[in-house]
Length: 203
Length: 220
Image (cartoon, rainbow over all chains, first blue to last red; front, top):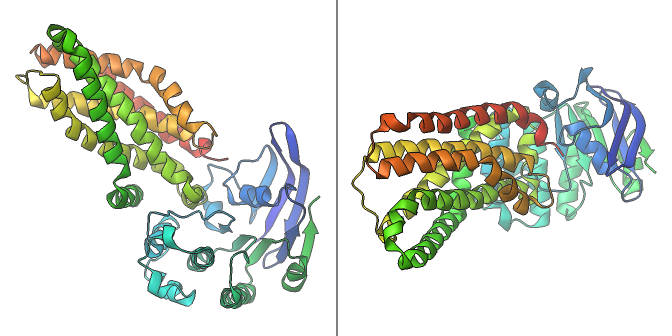
């Protein structure tokens, strides 16, 4: 699914972060994004996912305008962000099941996916007791089960141990093989060069 | 969808029991303060009791609403539904239902001590009293959830909720106090239908307004 951003502008307290920013990402393309702190990498991903509003310009998800009233576009995107985006007071299984229902996906696969990311035995543990690496795996499990067309990854390698990194590479390769459109933010430029088709620097 | 959203709030509360417990203890504390303060003029208590009751309900509601919406900000859990393909208006309706359940449950817990500590007679229609509580709480909740949603992304959210809610909900407090006062004086329900209508109107109008605007107000 294509992702097109046209003349996007966003300011915080009258300080512009983006001014007429445009980019076009083709279906199945993997694009890396890097830049210094405060350059707007996370802001951009949040605007694409619909979590954050835009001041000016448009974001087109498969030629459909992304805006707060448009539910359809949000079904095609998943934002795996810095923050957890899950409820600490629910178990891993309950969180994934809850999100699956929001996206109209079957809950039958939840346990299988949790097993796949190595959280099968921890499915009934409250998320507030998960370690950083476990949380990252849980977010990965959410992305797997939602199976969106466009995946937005914000520092996806943070907190992952070697086993977690291998798991992430495996899942990433599957997304690549299934021609998912991937927009990934990372400080690791070497990783971005190796795993994306092109990189963009925000200044 | 609303069922799943409400169930999620109920599950979290069932485990933590934070909202209802804190609302109950807070409501009980204010009741005790009122009971002690009015010991100097016990003959006035029946006159002021309806107003005091709704002050307690309004104050405890602020506490409950604040906590209920704080759950969404912990680890940015709200991203799960803000980014999801759901009408965010349904999330507002679910929040109204969850808040209503929690506030009504805490009311049921502190209303009995309220009557005991303030030494109030209970020779009035319990059905009419339940109706007033239902509509009054519903009106407070529909206004409160809208304000909590508006302030969800604000840094001073904890302070903003009472600052915005108290003036917005003052017509509700007035109407509910009028109804309760007339009920305590054993005046038939037909004589305060007007005030009940105000409560019902607030409940419905703010409920619809919240449903329609929640889509925009929860985005960062």
